[in-house]
Amino acid sequence: MASFTNQATLRYNGQTVSSNVVTGQMISPLSMTKTPLEDVYASGDTIAYVISLVNDGSATYENLSLTDDLGSYEIGGGQSAYPLSYVADSLRYFINGVLQPAPAVTAGPPLTVTGISVPAGGNALLSYETEVTEAAPLTAGSVITNTASVSGQGLTNPLEASASITVESGAELSILKSLSPATVPENGQLSYSFLIQNHGNQEADQAAGVTVSDLFDPILKNISVSLNGQPLALNTGYSYSQSSGQFDTVPGVITVPAATYAQTASTGDWIVTPGEATLTVTGTV
Image (cartoon, rainbow, N blue to C red; front, side, top):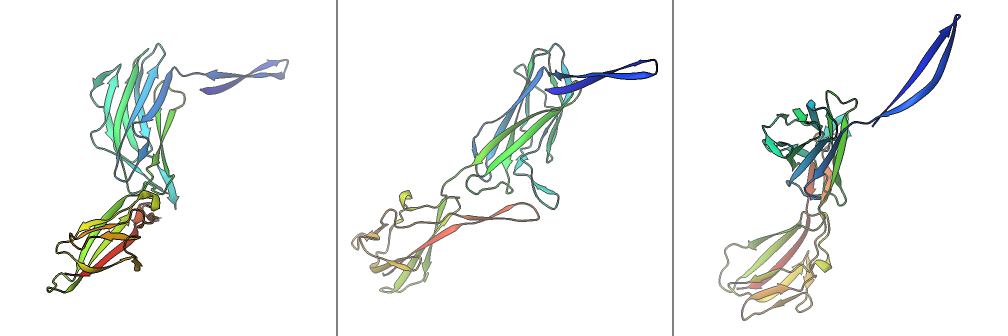
């Protein structure tokens, strides 16, 4: 909705008199909404958006242009980072529900689409996919807000619509097992190490019930177990059957801190340093 003002001037006998100022509102019959098809995101995800244009007027809007800032934000020095990128050839364009040939697309960033029409008393819908880039913030509570605008013939002011998605919160664990030494004699001693990494933005705490299980073959005898260099006790820290080789940590004994994140000043990309916990089991074969 755009405001406008107007004032008249009266002149007579060399005098000038101004009228009062009147104010009006200009209402566009064209409306716009932007909707994400996912509420949350993680690094590398694909997020689809839908732009809806509804024309309640009696005239067709032609040759409109759409611009999507792909969530652009300032990173200093006049530079911008883009947490979203357009997925090539993903644009679909409908008029009154009927699929149309795709209009011209420039991936950017920002994304631009030209040659859009909205018929009188009708609607146009554009859907497209974006990929979450390395410039997307990943700390808990982070939000990507991207804004699309439509401008062109018949529009006094551009239409704008924004949509926000929130980073997915939680632990994201992986485990890497290693053996030392790789060659061991009979009745020799060896160690299994389990590196547990958390790429998520929340700690895997005691409530997460993290458990490491393994069936040692060959069976280990006289084992000792440590977590991050601190010894774990049988029954309270782990269970082990020396007859079968079955090993299990007690649920919740292992906790893994959340990852930490640092943003590069030059590109805005986020570097992830995973939280870590190391479990070591040593025994005789």
